Image (tube, rainbow, N blue to C red; front, side):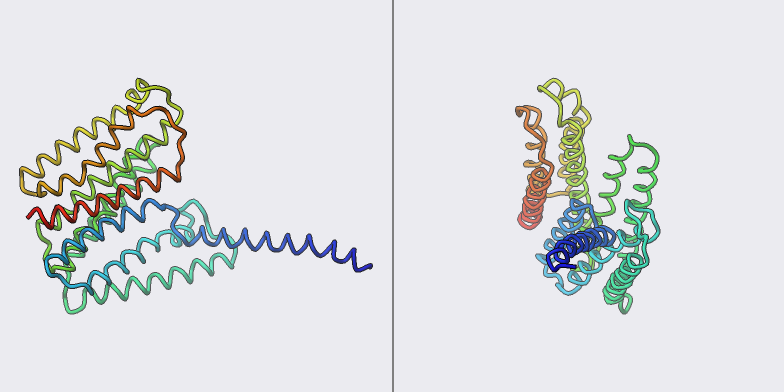
Length: 297
């Protein structure tokens, strides 16, 4: 066979092999890497706020590092476990995929077990068991609500944030050694923020094709009601001395962005930009919340 024909035959074969390798790599990544990018923020922002408030109270940094590692490993672990047992969006099918998923599970489980063992060593941090049980109940309730009906899916997400934001009191607790009123207040504040954020994102996604303020107000009535209830809850939290007055100010940018959307002209929905905008709101909220607790008491 002439060399030119050999090259013409070999090039498509090489390109096909490269394409298959790229597809296989993307599929393997989807089997082991969590796809809920927003959930990373819902996990890490509460952890950062709880840990920082605790450190301002002259806490210990090492338990916070161990808790952070354990929380990340456990959160990551859910995706490969669901892929292995077929309960997620993608299921491991080939022997190579099952091996990759299995190795990932073993590594993450070992990291989580090691860091948790260091936290519980010598009988310390026992209240983490209570917080872990609360998170587990929230995730079970989320799974049940998700399967009930399409109408309960947003509620399922909000209930799931109750489990993710448990990192706030957990971080404050392991740093200070006390499951205090402040730790519980941080959980409440982060849950209120996360619930509002989930509701707003879902409203934006399902209202992308609406025209005019009247349609926006008709579609977003439940969100506006949630804004009012959030404001009332913040007033009660302040009056009951659960949240410092300065800490309640961390919610103002959130309430403003939710209300202002109803009066904005129609814009095309850019999901990626929405995600980055909400991440910015989460960071700003975290900074203001920590400052409110630090300077408000």
